[in-house]
Length: 392
Ligand SMILES: Nc1ncnc2c1ncn2[C@@H]1O[C@H](COP(=O)(O)OP(=O)(O)O)[C@@H](O)[C@H]1O
Ligand SMILES: [Mg+2]
Image (cartoon, rainbow, N blue to C red):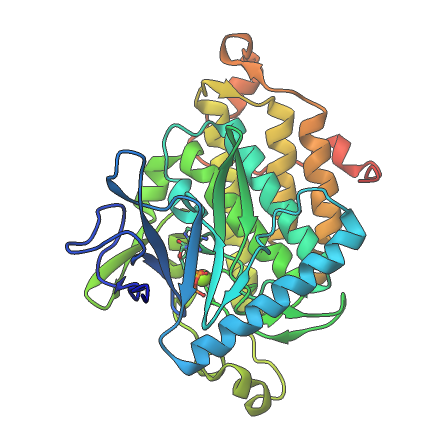
């Protein structure tokens, strides 16, 4: 007697946790998609026999040949990064999602609860939670460089959020545009220009700039949600509209492009088509952008001192962080700190001060007055930051 095995069906139109009509256990349904991949999760029967979406693994698939090639390369890059980091950091959490397994033309990965772009909009995340999440992003970005790689497309949609033993862990994912690069090397930009550095070339210092934008997005959603809404830019994407909030909206309003230029679209071929990289912004524009960004950082800092937070980090932590963000977003890449310095300064800022309860946090009258002005006041670099960095 032969056992009939049914080929699984794929439901590409169904999204989310609602099971597609006619689906059976073993089928797959789409849970999300990016520019290259479609993400499917298996439909399984639970103990009561009801169908639900598997919460442990996902399958990545691509419709195009180029997409499948990119997916294949992603597995290779993830393996390589994992191997190097095993030697360099041992079994420590890398904050990089390198667990990719080939399954025929598809690739299997652990299922996340979502991406960070969506997750940071949750209003129940305290500022301290956000400072912790942003630090995990820094660790992931630093580990990419420790492995000799740049992400090439650092943005919150490419960072996955996992809940493990009750704790939120974020990991860098999507190595489609990731590539090996020497510490002082430069390469062409093929990722989304929204998050790339103004000089328009991919480099270690360029990734420092992108990391600052990600940190700003994570923090500003709690510091000033009204400002995030005000700066939002709506972008038409096919039939739907996507929103670019906060600092992303701010940059788009001030000359940043949302779409890749011709060189970016050409991808690998672009490397040969353009010999010398042309920057995304001219030097003058980059300097203007620096001013705009720094004013935004000052405004967020002022907001911190005028708003009371339920769970508030010490003032000094926040001052250090904002001063660090300003250094990371300098127009001149040579003036930005290295990712290693970023990580050590970030860590130093909050290991010096634990969070304190809101009731205990009474800003002095002088400070309160100082930050009450409606115009953003520039942040003075705290004295501590001029001291030598501690080893990491
Ligand atoms: N392992 C996963 N678990 C849950 N959601 C995921 C997972 N991987 C990706 N996603 C979601 O799908 C989106 C697209 O995935 P991504 O790897 O970035 O593909 P692309 O290369 O097409 O950009 C992500 O932004 C995220 O929202
Ligand atoms: Mg992506």
